[in-house]
Amino acid sequence: MKKIMWIISFISLAGTAIMVQFMPDSVPMHYDMAGNIDRWGSKYENLIFPIIILVMSLFWTLFIHYFEKKALKSTDEKESAGAKSNAKVISIVGLCMAAMFTVMQAFILYGAYHEAVSGATQWTVDIGKVSIILLGIILIVLGNFMTKTRINSTVGFRVSWSMYNDNTWRKSNRFGAYAIIISGIVTIIMAAIMKNSFGAAMAAVGTVILASAATLVYAHKVYVQEIESEGGKE
Image 1 (cartoon, rainbow, N blue to C red):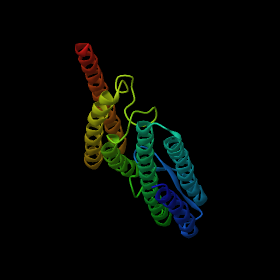
Image 2 (image 1 turned 30 degrees about the horizontal axis):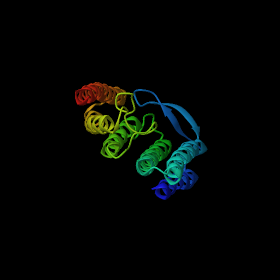
Image 3 (image 1 turned 180 degrees about the vertical axis):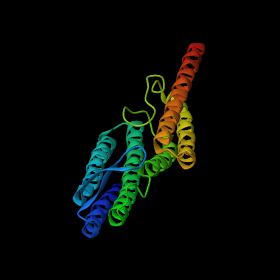
Image 4 (image 1 turned 90 degrees about the vertical axis):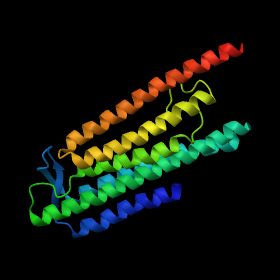
């Protein structure tokens, strides 16, 4: 996963470096809410985003390395298995992020080139909508892997209620996974049907907040049930 993540990240930088050679010196660099071009800049500014993608890949690599090292050092079989599981999930997160931003960069470059050559005053591609749709896809992918994490302080739905024990963690994160997947599906639908990308973005934020709130309520419910169950055993 790490190798694929880095390959994608370097493809983004290499592809951008090649593409800018064919661009006019000045290209659109920013748009207002209505999609009007409100700032032009040097074509080489397009290299900033791929560099950010590489920095993010480094960040995820360090996280992965931390859990891999923890898995090797741990003498507890359960803790080691949990660390390996978390390293795998983080690898998937890093890969998804690199892929998402690389696709986004491709749309940005296409739009900038087309607008600069044609002398357009508005965006060719609604980058806002593209990013929201990609976000929805990421949410769906991450939701499918949330249930594979073990209790930890980095990955998953982490509140004191969900982290009480393995059972509360498993149930809370399973519910959270379904909530996030539904949120991702709704996000994609809203981005597709709404004309305004800002409105679609707000709708996406709203669905994520609702999913998080619902998971928080469920985690508390599971926690209370667990406490009551332990009390009954005594």
